[in-house]
Image (cartoon, rainbow, N blue to C red; front, top):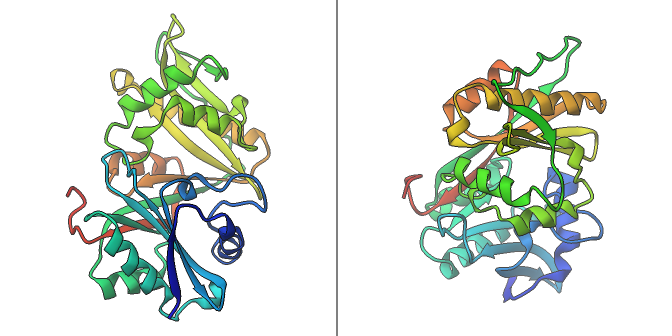
Length: 294
């Protein structure tokens, strides 16, 4: 059995994260610089064998937008199928508040086996959709009357974007908790590009919606966030913003684009399907709570 130790920090986990990325394609971690946001703060559980870090769990004690604690669990690829994952998950369940949710990125079969062993149920599914650009041009965005599009201005637009985001995603466990400080922190990330952050505004320059795009290493674009103020919904603004961002990403010469959407958001899944997006993977959350709304 591995030795498990709870810590207030875990600076030495980077090699483990890099090894997992090499095998799984996740998490998005680099050889230097800050760790991904989902591994900052909270509590850290290290699993070691003969002094080597073979597994890790991060417990977000602050929780999501609804106060539910969330955990990430990783096992080094060379030490999988040895019970390390089960030990880590059991320790998280023992320490966390009841109802903690545990991510299984890629809905890995190993994670599903651990969940079944410990009586966890799947309570959320986040779909990853993929669009490969073909030879045909994208449709031109059609903007509602009185609406124009411009790009984000750092130092000026953070509060307005957060206000729209809060209204658009008051139901979302992560996105609904976005703050101006979060936006400002992301502006310091190496991938941030204000020219790929589109705002739909009215005649008074009031932000009605936005499409924040992202470019990943390997020339993969992402529909990072599309948000529309509820008062501006129903007129095709979300579709127009999505097309504006896709046009930008295609103009950069990227061959494909991905996005993430909740599997139970049927209208959004249908809209993206009509645009040519298709399912490529899924991330799921497991919990001892057996209903998504609990």
